[in-house]
Amino acid sequence: MILNKYTGEQIEFSCEVFPPKRDDDMYEIFQTLDALEGLQPDYISVTYGAGGSNSKKTAKLAAYIQNVCDVEALAHMTAVGMTAESLNERLEELQKKAVRRILALRGDKPRTMTDEEFETREFRYASDLIKGIRAFGDFRIAAACYPEKHPESESVESDLMHLKEKCDLGVDELITQMFFDNEKFYRFREAVDRMGIKASLHAGIMPITKVNQLGTSVSLSGSSVPTELSNLIAKYSEDPEGMRQAGIEFAIRQVEDLMRNGIGGIHIYTMNKADVTKEIYEAILKA
Ligand code: FAD
Image (tube, rainbow, N blue to C red; front, top):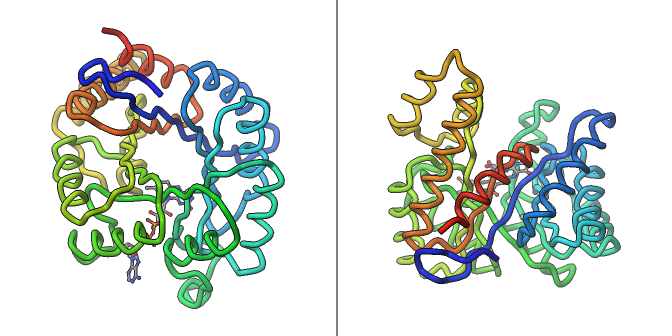
């Protein structure tokens, strides 16, 4: 927990890491986790490869976070690629490793999956996965939400309706897709409140520290980019160090504004870079 210097309330502070693709890079991620441990986050989440690829590494990193770093681990898990049998195996493994928190997701179609396999999947939505996890045992469950709606949703209203159905199954935290425009988040938060959704909202913050990072992130998320951020990218197109600093400062301004407006949780997409997260963490604590 960190203290919100503007409201005097406690805020959950958390981070996301992803398992490296190459086994050789595992040493680096353990170093990143050791550095993040020093920030004493409320939890560190570990992503899950599309369709279940790399799921062993997700469990391994979650176990390290939980048992070596002594920080709560939140293991991501997707419905796509899951069967009742594999879900049981994954949950038993997490239970054995003392990991008690799961981010239950639908997932997207992996490149290796045919359209037919995707359409006939056993667990259709995140909500079906949540039901399976609840039936297995006692896990704390988080879910994803989209301040600018899920890209496949027909409308904001239908996305919110499905979000409410998901939350009614027992969701403790909602972690947002990255967003760069806080006004969009505040409108979403009002709608979430109107729907009677009680889960705590954790704002997903992606620090943009490289000129080419935004293109990839935005095309995947559908998040809109305010002029202030696109101007920074144009200004620092030839200056990597300037971009790094400007991206960190943009993220700090975003978090400070969220704190002034009473946010419940800040979730940093670390991109496995502990130094960037540490700079943001230290700046937002300063009076
Ligand atoms: P859902 O909640 O199932 O919603 C998906 C879509 O279906 C939405 O449009 C929703 O409105 C609609 N819908 C929901 N229920 C119904 C219903 N009953 N009938 C009709 N429509 C319905 N992906 C990974 O592969 N690995 C990760 O580790 C990962 N981590 C993520 C972390 C966060 C914080 C976020 C925001 C996303 C993450 N993703 C990850 C991406 C995620 O898997 C995709 O965004 C995916 O497309 C949707 O997942 P969801 O859990 O939000 O889906």
